[in-house]
Structures are given as C-alpha cells and as structure tokens.
Image 1 (tube, rainbow, N blue to C red):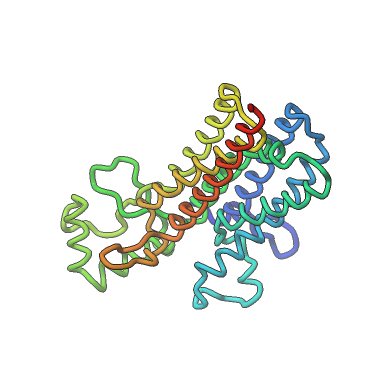
Image 2: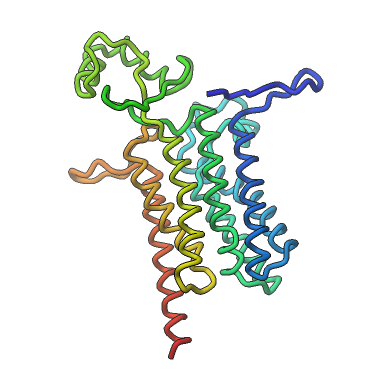
Length: 295
C-alpha cells in the first residue's frame, strides 16, 4: 500500500494520495462509460456530463456526511473543520453518496425533462467500475481491511506496522497474549507466530466483484427485455447483496444494533439491507408499469 504515491514539486511539495488518485480515476472512468452509453441510449453528451459532475460533487458530499453522522469518532479528529472534509484520507460511505447523487440527479432531470430511468441506466455500469477503482484506493489507503485469515488461506495481505489493522495486532499480542494465542490457534497459525498475520484482501475482492457487476449489467441489458430504470435497479440488487456478504470478512467496523442473542451486523450490512429494500420497491413499480402497458 502507498498512502502517498508521490509529491508534486510545487511550492513546498503537494502530496498525491493513492486513495484520492484512484477515487479520481473512478470518477473519470464512470463518466466516460456513461457518456459512451448515453449516446447509444439517445441521451445528449452534455446532459450526461452535467448529471455526472453534479452527482460526483454531491455524491462525495453525501458519502462524507453519512460517514460523519454514523461512523465518525470525535477522537479521530486532528484538525476540526479540515479533518471533516479530508476525503483524500478515506472516510466515505458509498450508500450515502449514492443516495444523495441519485436524489440530486433525479431533481435535475425532472427539471430538464430528461428520462430519469434512461440516465440512471446509462450510469449504472460506470458506477460499478468507478466504485471498483475506489476500492483499489482503499487498499492504497489501508482502510476497509479484512479479518485475520486462516493459515491455509494463500492470498492474505499485510500492511505496514503503523497502519491501524496491523497496529491493532501488535497491541493485542503485547497486551492480551492469551487472547492472541487463542486467535492464532483458531486460525491454524503456529502458537509462536508474531504479528502481523495476513488479512483477507477484502478491498481486492470488492473491486473484482464490482467490475464483474459492471460486466453482468451490460450482458443482462443486451439479453433481457427491460424498461428504462431496470439496469440501475439490477445494480442496486447486485451491489447490496455483494456488499452484505463481503462485510462478513471485513474487520474495520464493529457490529451494531444487536438484540437478544443476535450480535448485530456491521454498518455496511445494515445499509445494504436498506438499499436492497429500496431496490425492491423500484422493481415493483417498474413491474407494475410494464404490466399496465401490456394490457
């Protein structure tokens, strides 16, 4: 991982963060894909571009606000206001960004009299590709990490010692040696193994999954009869299911909102459930609309 890829020789030096660079690459890739698809779907390039810029800006705002409201800890703050907006260090919740981006795009398209469903369909595969690039940025940043992997798992990854998931392991081994030894035993590692032990590469798995979702959307679009808005609904279903299950292998957020004997779910899983239900509502509306037209 490389939080800072290089430093631009401007003034005292401007660091280029890996997370920010891949986030930008994701935005550009998503916009290019949407512009190419929009032309085929009968949308003007200007309208696709305008929606893209609006959605990118408000999507980042929504993703950051969702993180600050739900998952931000005050003790993490290092600079007040500037820390709140430091998105180049990570701290973006995708579902919050998607919600605000879709709402703002819907309002803009309604005002302009442009097909909302058609525009969302143009963007759906690009969104998947863009978020996939963002997950590579997460790997570069050392966030969204996975749980410790079993000794038999061949693709585990480690980070530098000062990065949070590895620092936690060193602290656990030194402060709670019995718990550390118990974890090693449960994962099949030798009892004298010292940290760091490899983690599941959840960032890479997520990125590959998102690229496959983009491919699946294009294939489905060509083979399944559909109405405008169907492709974005497919994306919501596929993303929410994938996000729900990958969270079982992530270890960067605690379980929340448990009750009785149920320990709760991670924040990403709760948001994925909500996202899936919203998709189900839109699928129902699309199906009803199609049935009315066929009568």
